[in-house]
Length: 204
Image (cartoon, rainbow, N blue to C red):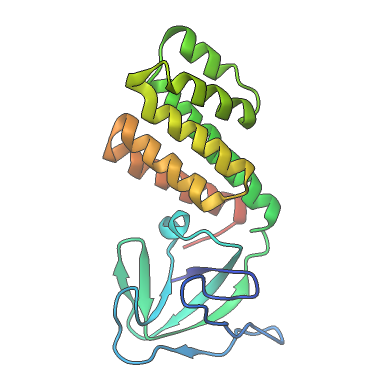
């Protein structure tokens, strides 16, 4: 099974702070072994399947090889050992920027589902995310039934402008759930994963 791992700049684990040994000379990096028995989120080498990617966005994306028994959890997999195979070069600052903006506009569209009439027209007419943020925050005070969706739209716009792709994807997923339920949230996460895979040329 092909797996992936998001890391901070320099191949640093975002939670563990572990500095992963990187590939050199055209081959994979050295194996990293987990100490002791595997424990979810605490011990083991954790990685992502394609569908898990939106949950773990960070500065660098790597293809990884896992060794030993691979156990699947919600939103991740884990194994006794793993190694970095190659960096996914397409996951650049520009790609993160574009992805965050796409998620923000999708969050705006979810807010539109909760609006009617002039309020919907005003939000739909926004051509920039700065306008989405200011308009959604203004409307939130006048549209109590749509207030949460509007605040999410405003926050989603702000996270995109602030280059916070992971937060923007999270907000888009929860905006979908708020407006249309759990199935809509799952569908939004699937869209996010599919969009990443298509843009970056990833395969399972």
